[in-house]
Image (tube, rainbow, N blue to C red; front, top):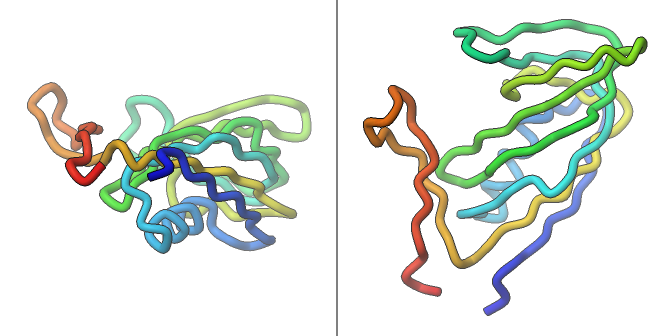
Length: 137
């Protein structure tokens, strides 16, 4: 069994970055994946900054300068960094509402060795990543 599988895809204008990533993850039944790379541009963003309860939004023209995270059919955790037309960069937790401007080029890789789960474990009040070794491997 091949351990690492790669999925490369492009999103087109108007598509929602988070929803589109999760759609591919669900279609391919990715159990333990990560974003290897992601670049492109947005006309709208919705990201949650550190220690904030809600997302922050803006409209304009933004470059995706970083896209990283863990992805799974059991839940994903993705962060996004953007720069504006002056080079000012901001980043945070990717939320629904990030609309592609011209393109988003993404490569997701996954491993058959693990399964990523999201569960409360008592260390924080949130459902955090739990890595399980897959028995069928």
